[in-house]
Length: 479
Image 1 (cartoon, rainbow, N blue to C red):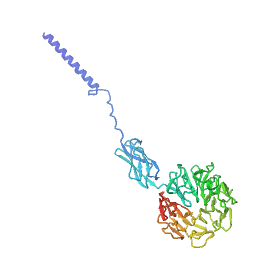
Image 2 (cartoon, rainbow, N blue to C red):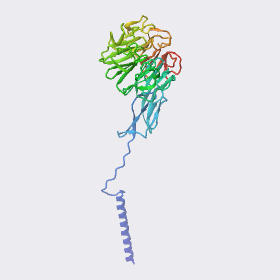
Image 3 (cartoon, one colour):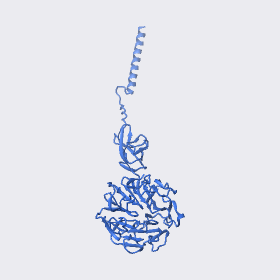
């Protein structure tokens, strides 16, 4: 029995040792200790963290009513970068701009500057967005006005009894109304009751009164008026337009000059006094660069800086004494800018000197003297940059951004805060950020660098676009 008990005890001890050895091997295989030739696996690295956000474009300016899309790029702790899309939230610091939180599309609502912020978690990136007023150019007719906005749209206001606003109606408008739905307009010019405009594709369009064929569509007569823009021909080569009282001028990209409309005074320059209802070429062989139209006369500059005139000359507005039904050269120059009024003309010489000639019954030549048929200097300053002429008043822009005006002021068209005629240039207000000017029969429009448009002068037909029909003797903001 003892022998049997001893044997059983030995077997139990052997089994126990085998179990312990098996457990040790299992633990070692699981990396739980003991010697092993296996290499331990590496720990998973932490993902890179977002350190900063860059917003683009940087410090951008847009016009009121237009959009700007922003993008965000993240920089991470490992030096990598990535475009941020769905994870970013967008915001604006003020009311001048609204922005879609999920897309970064901002819209200018009013003039001002705002901070645009892109946010991911606690990380932010910013940029500046400035909103300008919407206008880029303007044109003043007899009792109506037109203006281009930065988005390429065309707006009109004032007298519309002959369809000159182009909105399809014959109703006057006291504030700007949209002309059609096209947003590819690039230039505009206004006559007494008609308009010309160009689109970015170089096509030519006209509308309004057409008694003398001034629309250029091959028709004549009071019933041939067009209350909406109508395309003239199929060419896409037009680069500039000008409008007299009842005649029209336009340049093509090849430097040729074309005219149509009333021609009783030879204002078309084709050597006749016969009205034309389609464009006819003027001054063949000359390369023209700049055009302007007075009420019944025309002016043009050639590529060498010479100035030419033709049409009515009863007050010396052509710059010489003789009559002219074809382009005739004015002495002096070289010239860089020009404008025609009812019976007077203005031009700026290449050295910045300003000259005037023609009728001076209301001081529109810029001095208290009599009218004359030759260019005479206005002031001794050499910093004039642009000119515009109304019926009996004149306006000019200097290189320092100031606007000056003179002549008839019965309706406040000079803009100096009075209704007193001015025989010499007077500065309008204190602003020094004017960039463009235009003059109607008795009202004036001025564009400032911030894209705001102002009007002053006669407003009986709401041609100032300020929401009323009160005359203004100082600049008032167009709505």
